[in-house]
Image 1: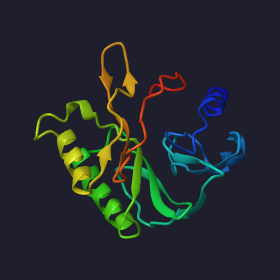
Image 2: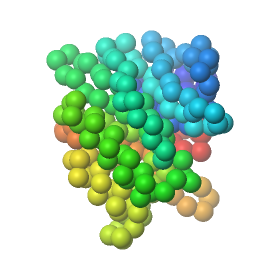
Image 3: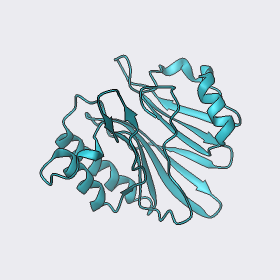
Length: 196
């Protein structure tokens, strides 16, 4: 946690989505970053998983209750107010042992529900689907990518987010339908987990 606190101090992000928090319900008091609010949704009845957000005080926010239990991923949705803009931000964790085809069906349901509420969405997290393998039009990765494109969601990360001695992959990403004209996405190579 000290490493994350240092990283936040150096970069001053306004929103951080975290997947695989490994937290339980009563762990809220353990997590503190400078001037941030922390909310999370732990995995129920099983170790690991969980998702959360650190939210800067620059945002007014509401936790959005979608009230649907999905079986292929864990998620948390926020409605963020920033000046006169409202947008939704959703953090996802898809365990690697779930079927991508089932995930594509479920994520389509979630995105449909969110986009009924707002035109602007940011979908971020650990999808455990390697975008470097999307060239084959019949691959599950390509179908995942096409699913997100059907909602006008484009990736913002194009460099590997997980690197091992044997391979590199882009399994973590931020997808959005918001035009990012004057912004830059990048991967911070910071060794606080097995992903960047």
